[in-house]
Length: 421
Image 1: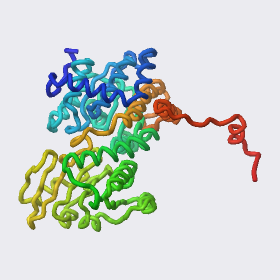
Image 2: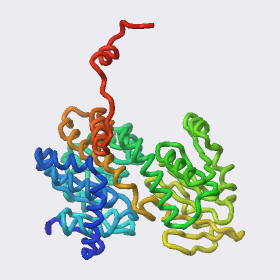
Image 3: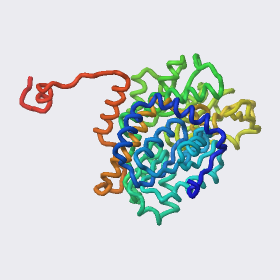
């Protein structure tokens, strides 16, 4: 391992990290089943992998599965604030997985860690936000021929990769793990919903009941956030640019309006769109005193932080992960977790039981891409339905839930066209 190196905050944190990794493993039965299969079949034997992921307890359990499958794995952080330092230490100390991740690392260190992962000359990339793939295409073009395929975990990364594919610049096939039904229906909705509210509450200790919570967007993540905020007693407003999603939000019982109308009445604003400047200067100008802003999207661009900095006459930190901006008229606006992923920066991210399905998709998806790369074009692919179905079946089995199966007669009926009214 010494020839690969590592860069973590403090190896003495490793015992604590190991305890938390094993605690999370109890809630990840699907990964446990896949790990047993991988140990027997070694589908990733001889494959170098570079994973740019949130370095959390759940990711550590995915890493153990990949290594059990024979992968030669290196990890780096996919966000400067999402690393759990004790987990990073445990990955190095107990599992001998070279890891480059420090919570709070600056921009230069973040990209140095990305390059350290690419120094591994991966055959398969495993990304969360597409920074690894983007850096590879920008800075390491000589290595592109070594890459067989990649996987991508998050909506923002899929958006970037599809843009690369449209422009003809993507040089290897990538699997959109994010688009699996067992990912976006559960991870994005239930995982992001719970963990985002958890991050906001941990950072502020605010009572959500009675507050007006404005959720930007109504994709799968925003649906979950809105659901959990309403469950906590909030009055929820949705803002959208897509008429179909806006209509769905109305039918789900939410108020829908432009952000400019929501800005003066909102107490808490949560962005989860994957786009830039969703909260901008003209919104800041009319927000009420004490308004709180948090981001649940992958990058810290959804809230226009440079505009906020320029408008403020004073900035202070009244609590960890809370930056207070004093406006010229005396209003105080609060930004959580530097505008980065609030659920991972101010809390612990998704619960392990949800990530169990997402990371099962990553593990099985990597094997699928490896086996089929020769016939795949250089574009973004959706995970096969049979993989999705298998993960759902295993999750139900682990939960002790049984479902019906079609009879032979029912299967024949569904496959026929002769019978009518």
